[in-house]
Length: 240
Image (cartoon, rainbow, N blue to C red; front, side, top):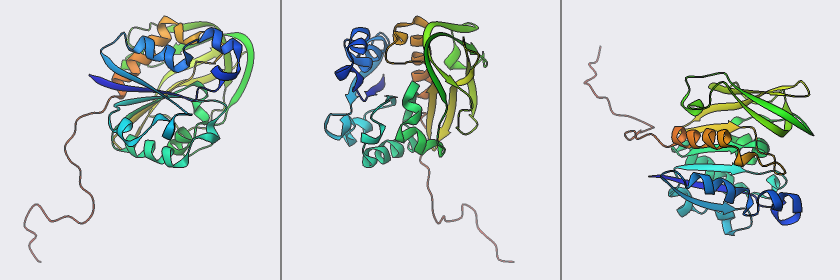
């Protein structure tokens, strides 16, 4: 059974009535709800919990961590960011959602500003599958249409993805690399663009399908022990 932790800063839900109307159980609650439909062990964690809900015990029992943040990136402790980074390097999967592109953990793992263009104008988003054989795109078809979303536009200041799975087009004319995969150490990272807090994006069936697929893709891979440092030879070294 895959162990999933859904992390959300959970700040908009406390201050914005519109967000509470869309996500009465919080964004983390909405995501956890549809993930529980699968054979996953799901827990949630939020910013204002002790250690942001990401204790050593929680992370050591997490196969895949989902991350949603927006207005409180700077409130995340550097110590916790380092803790999450080390778990990713050790094999934990990380799925970064929407405005999590500006989170400390994503910027740390990418090594760039992760900046972009944006606009809130209730415009249509069409997410094109550009890697139809990729497991994260399984069952999606050619594209996903979202009636109203926030626009993100290029240039997106990220390293070239290991794999580009989705590209978004917006009604206002912009395009965006909206589904990107990376490997960092033993861990896998997936960035998925849609999910503005005032829109019901996480109730969209195909958005849910992508996230479920991503959890399956990002889960740790069983490998043997890896050793570093000074090594004894496996074969006899004959002096010349």
